[in-house]
Length: 110
Image 1: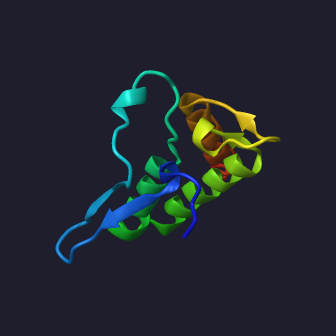
Image 2: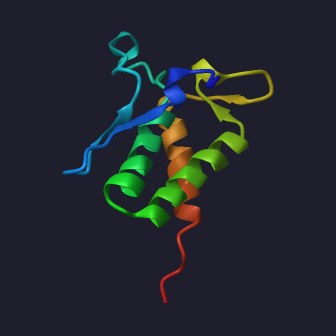
């Protein structure tokens, strides 16, 4: 698969006896710590994998996955996946945009 950035790759190590380990394939990026440059998509998608495969919460996982796609479709990008015509933002704003998308798709309470 051509991904464009390791910042886009979630992963899971799943065993028969437990929920497993869910994490992005990349490390903690200490070289850019505190600079608002990291790509949080793989971390967010790893959380979606935890919900789906570790906890059986498929609907919650789908909401997160759709929010990530929505954020990407709106053109928000961190530097590692930036291209002309998209919006270059930092890790914090990407997270805020994903959260906005998740919250906008919450069904109203009855």
